[in-house]
Amino acid sequence: MNKIEEHDYKVWRLSNNRKTFKEIEHSVMTKFRKNIWSKFVKAVSEFNLVDDGDKIAVAISGGKDSLLMAKLFQQFQKYGQTKFKLCFIVMDPGYHKENKKQLIENCQYLKLPIQIFESGIFEIVDNMEDKNPCFMCAKMRRGALYRKANELGCNKLALGHHFDDVIETTLLNLFYTGNFKTMLPKLKSSDAKKLELIRPLYYIREKHIESYTKYCGVEPLNCACIVTAKKVASKRYETKELIKELKKDIKDVDKSIFKAAQNVNMNAILGWQKDGKHYSYLDFYNKDDKY
Image (cartoon, rainbow, N blue to C red; front, side, top):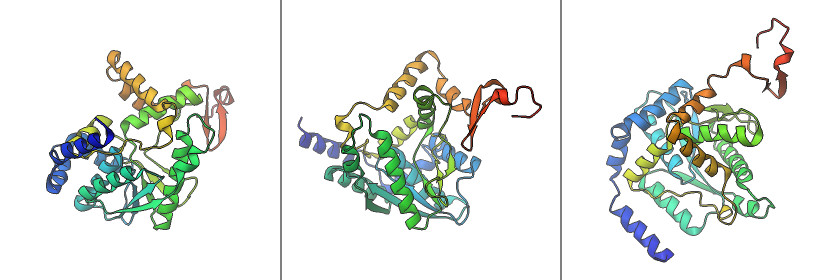
């Protein structure tokens, strides 16, 4: 099957599996209530991610995570008690025409009123002499989204990182940077001090996002990167596979990794950093100071 035939087959398959807009809206509150909607509401409530008067820039990459996040925000705005505004922004880093077309069609199907802006990041990263450009690409994407959110007068930027992203990031930092650092549900941007970054999918597992996407009959973009297609596989993918292997012997290993960042025992670690300053447990060993 050549690429054209493969594309036509996907279109045919999806068109025969697609749901009505009413079914898509209804499923979030019913079929996926336990594993998606309730987890979204829990994160928003527990971490105080949305306040009255907020203007939130919802970043849509075209992938399954951001598409779901956008739909959840629409539902939360419609049925929740909090009054806030939404801007659905799509940063085009240099997608192929086919990928961009697919992204736009998916957003139209899901009735997401997106605003697209170009950045040319793929071309910039492709010219860099780096065996693994994913980190730099992600950093530049984030910067472009910050600028657009500020331009639109938003005070918050929502990103579609989910539960699995959190534990993978924790392990990546442990294995490759030698520190224990996780992905936070919200933080103030260092590049744009007035902007707060939020992650409302924090408690939602990737497998449930995949189930929702499949139910809706949407074929989301994967990475759609024109650079890494010819580079080595990312460390994140390797870490994802490692967790799958660990779960075969340790059923709840992913939960344990996630909880570890919530249960750090400050009396049993060698050192830590806070606000750019490094501390050693020896600094407090013979003192009464609490650390």
